Length: 424
Image (cartoon, rainbow, N blue to C red):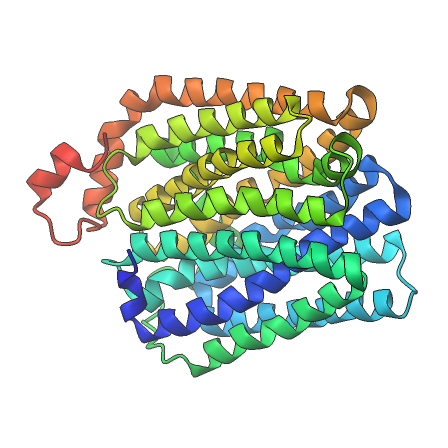
């Protein structure tokens, strides 16, 4: 389950990122609570989320180009440093009682621009830390780390906000970036020769990635399902402050516990994937998990009991994590190394970039039909997407097998065995 941690570089990355991500989730939770405290508006909650995520749609292709052209470690050091400074600015404004919703929106947009370069580069950087054989395990462990921080961060944020206010959460997030930057500086990476064609014009470089994603049926199907779920289901978190305070009549601590429950399920899902030795069955698992995510949203939307809501969010988080991490793994084992940064930028653009549109949509719908009905509608559409993906899965299996075999991701298994069991 933890075999990729035998690599020193991944050990440094894992430990630093774990600390940093706890701070990031503290920041995310505190930011939502701050906006809701200042405005009481679910629409503005969606607006802030939109501002933080829409830059990823706009700049992720450029981020993929940078990830494939330049030293990925240096790029990540730069993006993490910029994130630290932005978090520090929000902490200063909040602790000095000068913060406004406009400030939050501007800083969220700036962080989104940074993430457009950070996310695809970090995803593509994994293979340089662990090699091809342990890539799948590294992706799953990276996801479990992310979700473990999702459990801890919002709970800590809820307590800190309740005791001393949101500003100290932002300050803690800013300081937490020191850990990951230190880990990156201590790494020893042997950079490979630039891939053939790397000196092509930047726009052609970017278009090549889009063409590959469009013309490769298995990757296209996974990306389209990710885009749908990001639009209609992932924005559930935007409405969590509404559920915590209005539907369940709780406090900031209630919000932290709800987000933490999602993280518990997601962490279990990621660790379950980390224990797998191969990618056989992941295609079917993506469809099942997507349907489970939608079902969880619908059931949660009907709950008016705090403990029942917590229990429902755990399997929902499990399904959400299983779908996204399985999709990420399948895409990375099918894509050539020279295109990895650009394809992961498309993944980031759809996974993170569709969410802002969903956030605005969720905020507007919640104002009209209420938060519970909005979640139920999103869950229903996610289920329909899962059914459509499952229906088309037999058509793309053969091509998926061919791509995985071509990239040599079998961990040494003979090609004949892979052909019969790699994806079911």
